[in-house]
Length: 442
Image (tube, rainbow, N blue to C red; front, side):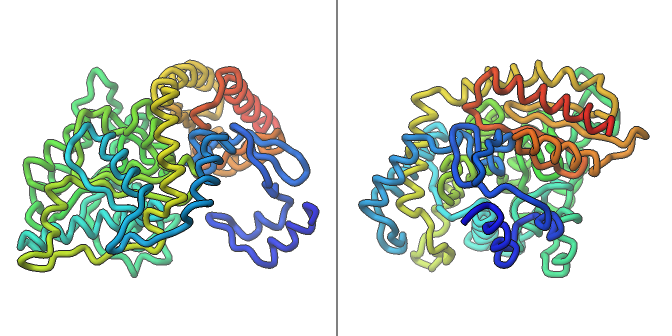
């Protein structure tokens, strides 16, 4: 089929995620191939994947080692359940993940996507307290504006009104603490004067309700879907100390921020803490296969023993630890280790920070920020009001130039593959700058 035929069939059959129906009435790319940092459509047009295909393809597209890992495993074992049996790739990947946590005793529970990893984390936290004879500790605390996936449990702790309002009646109640946001600090503080005043809300909730709280769940250092709202590691360190004081579990959702994106393997490392439960996904397989993991301290796992009482975790997913997905994830971790991907990200993040400086004096742009290989800026309408329309206009302008971005409201952000070259990165930022200027004139 040609491009026109694909589009027509798409409009008759496919329901697109996070996409307005009217958007698909216009021409859209039909992607057939990927190479490095680029996606290629049916007409041969190339698009720089400036968002790593929803923050997952950290090693780019069609990496030969990852393709080979998939092909090799697919020729041997395509799928096998993990109920009462195992297979080598799941065993090896679980061991490799635990090694990333500094040798501390952990257990790894596999699922297929980030939301499923979060769901498992929530249920593990509640059952942990149930196992200890404290069933009253079943509530959660999350940050305002947080996002943890689109299943009902994940939405209950990661509710965004613009996304989830229709299903609000189905959700369980959770405590919401004020979210830290350094670029938009409501006290107008700077790092030298900040005393983490925004932490008071979280401290108040735990002080008053610790006896009924199972866990606190947060996105570490950056609330992604809320508009790349970044905050200081000191907040996360203070939260870990408070959770320890009140014996509340700390769940860190590293699905978007993990695997080098912030300049460390995991974002929580910037705060020097060790969470009780860590959720992984997206970059775990380099975006090549659907796989996620919930990493749990061994002390939690031990409470799920089935003797003398049955505390088995009766929860699972058909494709949990799928051999092909596990094989490619193992190869991803090997590439990270052998090619120094995290250290490279730290270096390239400094390049990105330097290039983003040019936006600070650009009319219509405010709150420019950067963390590792994430950059974000907010567009206004000239009267200091957020302008999602301008952000969409810039998005369409860039797509016509072969650059794929997807704004979050009025926020434009860049999260390119971590393997992007310096010259390509510098040009990408310059192209975004010009696109903002060009759309302002029109």
